[in-house]
Length: 270
Length: 266
Image (cartoon, rainbow over all chains, first blue to last red; front, side, top):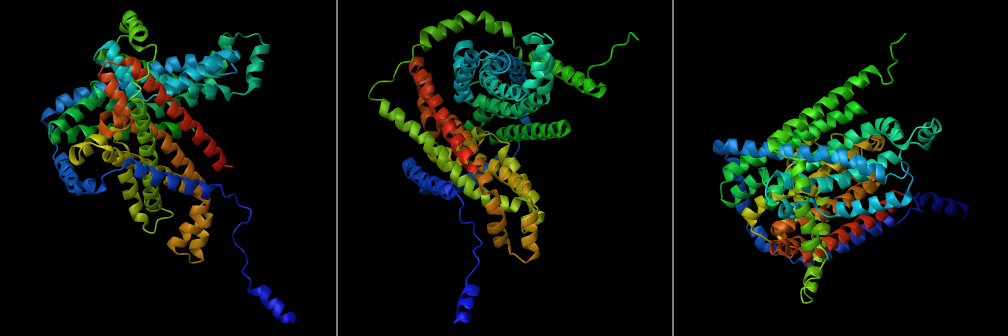
């Protein structure tokens, strides 16, 4: 009799799974799957037609591969314009972002209403995609780099304000208190304690934003502003695939270089 | 003893100086190249204000018959973003397994996989959309594919990094006891990386909500297309209410994903 019981105990598998694991992840995954299937039905995409055209895609890529360097001077000048718009908007928003970040951080002026107002205003600006701002700026300012810089600045400043405010707030209260005890004013505390401490984070954010700004700037041409995007979209529309291929390749190379540079900088800061 | 004690370390000061010089040089070069002048913004200030106060404010609702169409276009944008991200995430998970040298059964191919993902990622979504429009024609399906490509490439990179961040001990120990590749994946990698994967997935949904609005503007359908048509028709007051709607959509999605992410990482 005893033997049987022991055998039963031995035969029983030791459970490997943790019993009181939360079941949030499975529920989450199942609901995402259901929502995805529902939205695929809602979108009602004509898959047959789409897949029947896939061979055309190979054709387009084949054409894009035949690089055509005859318009290289146009491509280069518009690429330079795009890069300068990206850099300029980054620099202007850096300054604006530091100023507004100062208002938005709760530990600098210690006026609650001011920081809440600034933060919610910039949350709204950030929520609207950049090309919308650029389109509106195009209407206000007319064609040209001004619209591009101003439109990009709106979104970039909003982004910087939020992230800089976060970096400023992560500075310990003791530092600020120590400076307050020496009788330093709000502004001198900001410039002598908070900016130097947050500088490495500011550089990291700026590098990350340069990447996004460049790719957004390449996009802007397609909605009507100048730059490399305009070259790409107009030559694709005109079936001038060789030129488009060169332009896309250059966009890729620049974006890749910016990414590598940023990785380097991040490593040397840490 | 009149020499001042330097407050900043010498080498640090050097870095700051180089940084400042580079910034100033870049600023000057770019300003010359684009002829950008801040004063032109200031001098255009009147036109600016009159545009905002006359054309833009107050926001006006579109015609009552159009409202259901606008709302359904918002739904299209949301559906586009969610479904393309999910499909891209499923594909990216399988590919990412081959992109990490420590996990992949063919470590030599890992570099190739990552290089391919880098190539796809560094070309903006809208450029993909344009390439695809010229081959597949305009429509929601093309927007879907374009969003899939960029978010797929982004998630391959993010997933590979997540897998390499997680300690390799379990993978190695399973390898020594003779675990096969599927066993290693299902018993070591999935349990430890799943919440990280899902939080990247949520981030990608946030990004794609914006991107699908933009892709819509050039012909991918959705709320972007609606907004673009109102701007083109100079109905800026209606455009403003659609912009507010887009902002509301993005903020709500951001809040929801934030809550979900907090739950996930608990």
